[in-house]
Length: 457
Image 1 (tube, helix red, strand yellow):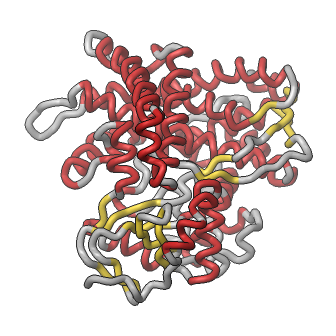
Image 2: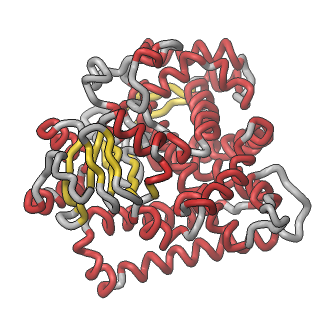
């Protein structure tokens, strides 16, 4: 098998001509290609790297699950992300990945999430005191505010209350800047020589080293401290078959990658959810009623997650419209074929999650916000692998239960304490970086609801 000629193709010249548009809004470009060429097609990333893009659930299931052993993470993650984030769960393959996954999974089981909920609640209470000061001065861009809230929560879930605010800020800023740089390297690869000679690559490497040094100091200190109930303790307690634990360097890589994966997903989901709810008063009121019925005056903990049935539907529909991970990439190890789709060895396969979530053949009126799509039982009516907010198959997101707890916890406090509305006459659109974020932010006005705030203070 030496050709993927059976798959419709975007020419190299058109791919190159569209590369700036791809860097600006890849979901729009890929969706246009799908409309013209069908559910699976070939194009050249940046006009250079050939890739197969698909929104076909049969192909997606084959690549991510049925024949997952034939597909490894592509150069985007293994080389580009690995360069900045080290060899951890996100950037490891084969048996090493299986071992790390098994060890780290213990940090997200029910017992651990029960313990983490206490740390998360304390972090949220601290963050909302700062949030109160911000909203007092007028409208705020909700995206960076939620980034601060979720990053502090994940950082303290990892390192406990020991992490200083200034250290959280440094690591958060580094992660955001490095991710933007990785996207530039990937979508415009012809600029990589310029990044080297101009000093851009060196600048981002130095930023990474500074953030690494901050986290390594916490890790080394913890070696001489009593056990705690955070995720760092899980990483330190983990043991391989030979009885050895992880090195400090590996714990650093895994910690950094958990920070990357664990905060921006939730902050983006929450940003889009508040935007959606601000123009849907009936949906907002139903969510508030459910929180009142389930929680009363208490904060949300892990045991409450399964009780928030309607709110979960709202979150799921928000994740369909605005999936944080807008694409998943893989590389074929050996020649493969699924139906008429030929996938030669070495081919990069891009699962266009955003496109799958907005495909009219699987989602009637796909641009419409409709929580009924996720009423229990309705999932049986749609094809598998048409809904992938946390990926799919054996490499699906390890922290999806943590993410759902985090989103529900923050949402429950925000909706019960504040009234809010979107500032009119602003441009709100998606920007597909590593995560699907609001390009210009989302400015909102918040006022404290005295009755609700007093009841849960």
